[in-house]
Length: 361
Ligand SMILES: *Cc1c(COP(=O)(O)O)cnc(C)c1O
Image (cartoon, rainbow, N blue to C red; front, side, top):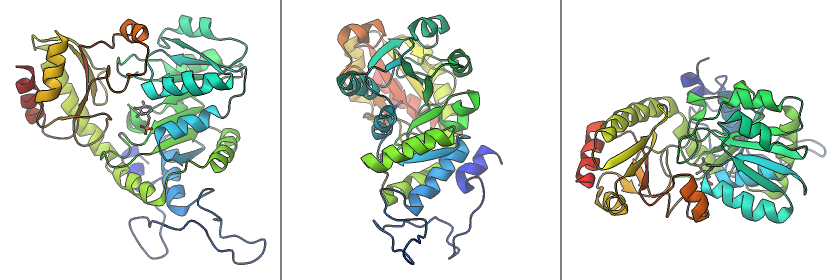
């Protein structure tokens, strides 16, 4: 089956006993047992819940993984992932990661005796040079946020062959509609389901998709033990949003391509970072005053954190997503007071351009 069918039906169309087309919300914290030593397959919602399970199976099918786990946010998924590590382990990560992931690595992981080295994972020699015998995890985001650097997932996976390091790709920006890292050799895919998968700026969610049963077993144990599971109602909302992933990605990507071309012709715009896929654009303007003016003048586009929803959002990485990244690192990576990040929604492209035009006057 093709991916635009799988987002709607999962890997197989599965009937509900009642004939319900929308998978029901099993709003129950616990499940009764038919007898001693017997189970319906469900015991307690922290361990599993039918609504969450239905969504997890769809995610695993979309990412071509063995299994998937749904969490209460993207960060709780990353937090569960790093529970695989032990003191003395080492992490290699993209130097342009999502700010929250850097915060978790630098403040929580470091405290637990795990060190991280940040490099441009698009540079294979840099990856090779950063690997140590104790490197247990290589964490990449492609494209990176907000500078849109690309990493060759297959090449990094080849580099790690024969080592004891797990390759993790945060696939939030591309989604399985545009990229399936497990097919390219990644061991684990992470998602902030809050973004494109949910797609409506109304629910937080996170996912871990695993390539093997071994990783799935370990992470399921961690999830059950630490408990940051996705609630049944939120699983329903993400499932509902996911059904239109393909059409939303097509429309928002086409909008983004048109807007990126238009931005390049604007005299106050000094650089445009658009990887040519998906619907995220970062752009640099001529002065910090212009950046502030754009944020305050947009009327259709919201000045708000987050991305990947039907509504277009513009953010100021300096003060929002990357506020906790030390200034020298921020500047070295181009995250300056002139950089703006636009998440293009599915409104009409001409209306969005008109809004940006008025804001850039
Ligand atoms: C938003 C985001 C996260 C964190 O997800 P939350 O759902 O906000 O906790 C992680 N990685 C990337 C790339 C993100 O954009």
